[in-house]
Image (cartoon, rainbow, N blue to C red; front, side, top):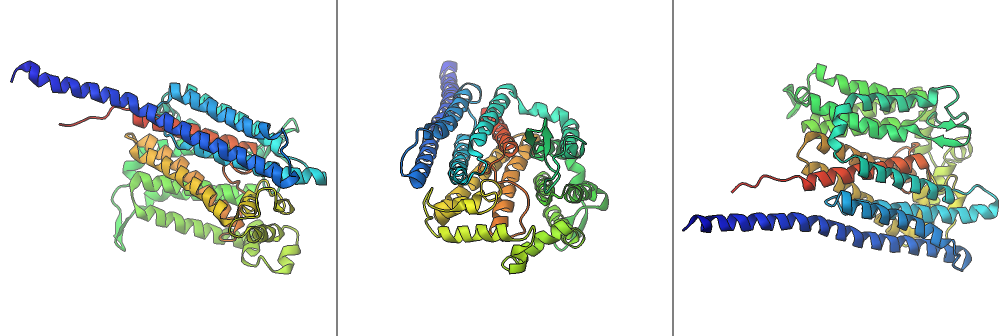
Length: 465
């Protein structure tokens, strides 16, 4: 066999690999386009059904409520074709369809509220969706290498803490709110900085755990078949536990404290692989919940509303369980297949477009529709975790896993709260609920996952043999 004969297969293999690397990104984007078209059809159908269900006719306004999400999603898809061709194809369509369904249901509630002379939110939600998508576009275009975030680990930590403290600055904090989590700029622009804080803290946690993973996973005491960390390694977890309690006490915000602590415990488990960290984290969370329920009136009332929701005295008191009971009745009214979009009465539940968007959708789409929405969240979180697992660098793995787990935990907290599985907290349902700060934060998470997945799939892999 000549030298030419031995080199030919190697050359052919290299060409095939190059062609495969070119074809795979195109296949991913084509798959994303197909899913995106299906998502846009679902959104347009939902808005049309809202119009038909409430008025019996199709208002030209449906082109606005269906067209704006379509234009935003297609624009981001086109940008991905040129700047992140290997990005995950499921993340964008799922985020788009969830955002569109939220806008359709908020629009449905607004139709009823306008007849009653109440404030409408759907037009504002459309504007926030445009801003959120623009933010995602900026991340995709400007953050070509997500690993640059690792250099600013501690800066993101200070930024996250600063965002959480903003509501306490005189003149910024929104007065009269149930929880000290809102800021007001100029008296008309309101924002919840804690939503952006969770992203900054996720970046900080990922960078911190990469630097300290060795010490955190060092050998400890063997007990009950598991290796438990030494006392000095418990310091970071105890600090986060105390910080979470501080958020609950100072801001009267049970949800954000639980979310940040849960995110850190999940990322700690991914970094070390130790089940003992999870057990310690769950134990601290339960201890904090019991302590807060005994000491803080705000948390105690949340627990009494949860445990004794249908007691007439609890329902009728100020800050009682009336809202929770109304949401449960709405879910019961929806049954298996729902009343149909525009056919129910979700607007009779207080803040149906925000905290109680899940019961609103459950009433009109039924148990089947609600399961479909939860399945979308499950796929979204699983794709994000898959992106993290496939990553070759520890920082990207922890960041993608932490952000995905944050979305999943937030959905569990909200759905569990409105269905009386756990006490209700003050979080929002990702993508669906009315609220600009939440929508912007979640679309920034989408952009980060797209960037990480593109880097993971584009990186050359060493082939042995």
